[in-house]
Length: 159
Image (tube, rainbow, N blue to C red):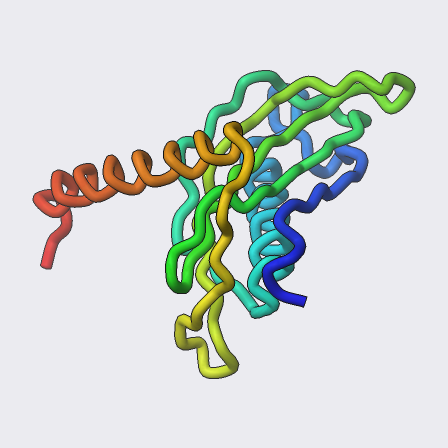
């Protein structure tokens, strides 16, 4: 049911196929996991198929090692008419320990679409806690910053 599930966590083991040349989990693998969690979160909130419109502000804080338990949590932090801003945290740690460290963070914007691929309305998310109000305000600030960056980048796009 739409408008109920605001947060989701995907959990799995980092596998040898995820490793880069330096022996740690490849950033591209982490980005794939982020997209999967953002989709699951957006689809759960909207009750619709969703597409990725934007992924940004990604910060790789600590490496993930093969064999780590990885937790990718997506949480709706702002809703527009057809879009959802989803805060993503990636945490990892040894399977034998309950401790997980934040390794990566970013914001992903998902857009709900209908069967024809046309953007469709999503349920509004209204923050109630002080922390959630701050997350929503941050999402709005980031939106304004992306608009300015987009305007600056226009000079680099060939028509």
